Image 1 (cartoon, rainbow, N blue to C red):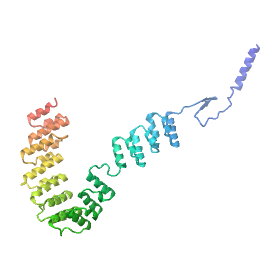
Image 2: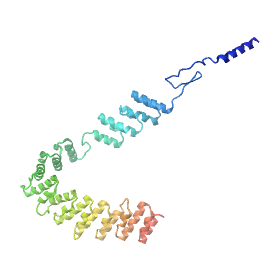
Image 3: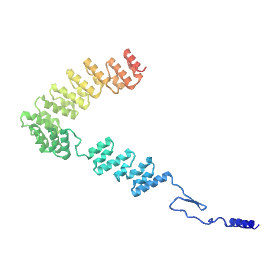
Image 4: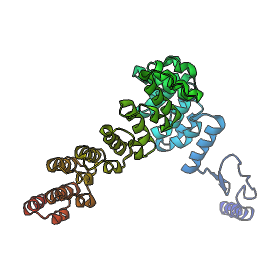
Length: 377
């Protein structure tokens, strides 16, 4: 009976006084996101995003990329990238090459370390090597290397040929470079730099070349007119043709003796891409005119130029060469062909290149159309 009384008293005390600790208010920790409920403390794990941010912040604060390795491999570069220019080792910790590329260039160039170029892909490696190697290292031709070094270091003594000396003299207005040239070229070079005619008193063997060089250096065709009286020499042809092309002015071919004039128009057409040069050739000079249109057709894959060739078999050769070697054709190109049988062949080739039967329907010749349609059966 006494036992029952003791249990009842204990029960009443429990009800009135409550559980031990109920009156306490726990102070939350500032160092961890723990949660306290009724005196029971539960630790809350940080989320993946928070872990990533903590790793990045720690890495940046301490400049230590090792924190980044707490992250999954596919997220690691985002953490390392801001530190990649700090050291080559950090750069090499990057996984993706497109992320690594910039810092590899940075370390190679900032430390002038050509060995880092070997850590790049082939295209970037070449760019890196060319940047860090001594000037003109990769110029293999001896004359071109000499020119490269001369212009790089401002010293004409590197030149290996007359063109280099002449171009250097014009570029740097350097009389001493002119002195390295033979008589005619030397005087033309000095005439240009001093803006004074030194050609007029030379003997004919040097005078014409002198005026040609003077014209080139002066950038004007006016001195071409001092080259022989008939403009029938090779030097006169070169001088007028140069400026016809340079100034895109075919009328500068006119002074040249007729035997070379057509060549000037042809060169003008090919070099400038202006077919008017071919049309300027007299129709009586049929061979030269046809050669011009043929050369233009081949140079610019221009089927319409084949139409201007009067000799039938030459015209057909022209059509054949362009149609069957084409990587692409258009309706307008095929429509420009004037010979019906070659127009049909052009449509057939167009159907083949475009893998489209519809172009077969434009073919007039039955045999060619049948062959075209058979490709799609």
